Image 1: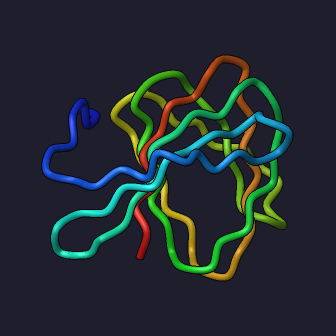
Image 2: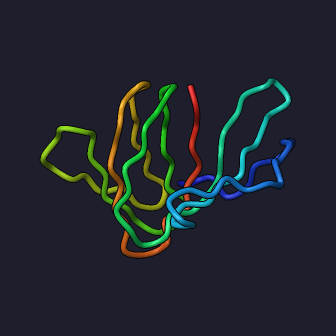
Amino acid sequence: MSTTQIDGVTVNTQASVYFDGKCVSHGITFPDGTKKSVGVVLPSTLTFGTGAPEIMECVAGRCEWRMAGEADWKSSGPGEKFSVPGNSKFEIRVTEPYHYICHFG
């Protein structure tokens, strides 16, 4: 089951906009200092770089993803997650809006 509501957080009202608006997210901070982002990727194929490890949780929509250097695409849909190592790159492709929560660390 995917996350439907996040309580008790501070939301950055200024959106982070990437790839000419194809990815838009808002940062959230929990009382313990944990940071995540919530956002949407619009239909496109994009390459992201990571600093810290990330877990991408699909809230709605569907995506295909693969780590840099891999040949095979994997699929992720509502309620599913995939992990991305720190200091790496991954590609994501979507054909419908992909709503996500990015868990950092």
